[in-house]
Image (tube, rainbow, N blue to C red; front, side, top):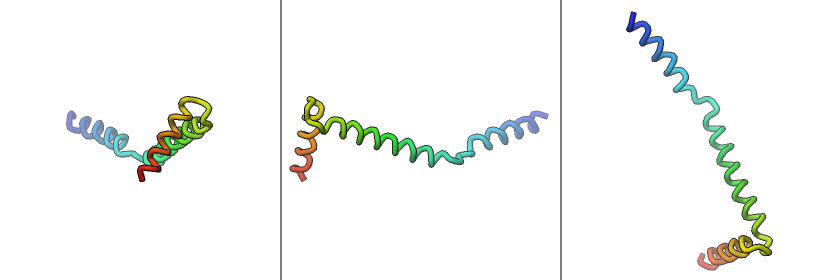
Length: 67
């Protein structure tokens, strides 16, 4: 009886653990949202009127001149 129950429990567990349908798509969506958030912060800070904008433009200029 224990073997039968154990087989059933492990079967149900494996079915849920191995079911990764859509997991990769979710990861790509999350990565895209992170990239968009970073681009939004940069776009908001590029104005140059704020200290954040000045810092971002200075760092970008430094990186570009370093290439």
